[in-house]
Image (tube, rainbow, N blue to C red):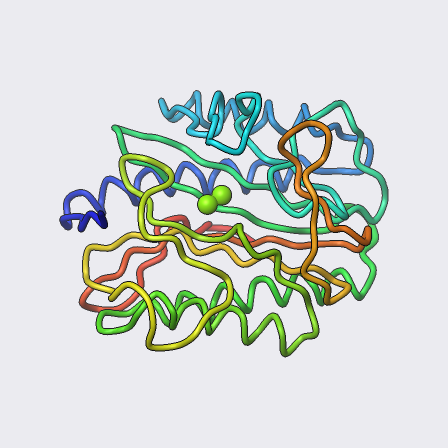
Length: 258
Ligand code: MG
Ligand code: MG
């Protein structure tokens, strides 16, 4: 069932989304060569703690997971696409890091992700990240009343494919509200005019993922969580929580900086 949110609920989700935005901004500022992924997780924990928010990631155990997620961010480096568990790994020069973070504030969830390079970037990595962000922007633009979920999926997929990148099917966006993952699923590729109708009050997490090699294949690492590209090529991820309103899409996890 797809739950429509009231304006009051969307305002509360915006507050949760702002905490997520602050956490991602703080993590990005702290991410330097030599800093560990666990240290970045602690940065995000402190932002959530200071805001009085809890983490929907910490202890999360969906059906595919054999162990509960142990952190408040997903930190996915280079060939890791999403769901990377923060470890003692210290970031190296030129690493491509995707950070996904959620927050629950006053019972409402927010979910957002960014990708960036630590140290000196390779041009091909910047292009990959830029494409994930452009795909996200295209998906958000399609999140309007009267549209369909397939319009969002099509908009995302078209940007990714035009750039020559792969798309890891089976993982993508979702409805969000009191729970982080609600109906409907929002795939990262699809047919326009198909799927669930978009109505004011729907709130969706839209989250393109791109694989540099152009192949779509991935595997789950031994930790039971991290998704990695099958061919070792790099991946990028971008995500916002977006409310569909009568005035169009409203990004609830917008960051004030970057
Ligand atoms: Mg996320
Ligand atoms: Mg999400």
